[in-house]
Image (cartoon, rainbow, N blue to C red; front, side, top):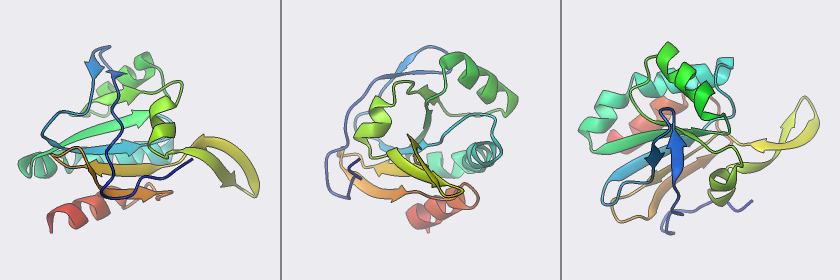
Length: 152
């Protein structure tokens, strides 16, 4: 797993969103990609709702928000509907995009190592370059930190 650094080109991709529509990083727009392990888990629910509550402020500053997880489209549709998420959730079931963004790798939980999705956020500028990248973040408070660092 190679974590992305500011100034490198963001890998391009096309994934299906919760409605089954293809989504890619919008050209010429600031984009926030946050990678989370699994829909309906406590930490991930907290994180997606924290980003939901900041969507208007981020959009007003020109940012498009995408949540990315290895969940199937159907589960993402239920998750988005239940929590009234106003931004696309993208299905990366084979974790190819997470891998290219450095968000897939070895994790530790209660002393055991395993391979999985590493909670991460990558901000892509209008020029297609990585502006910021945070890896192995905590679910709680992360959306606030991202918003503060980008807008304040």
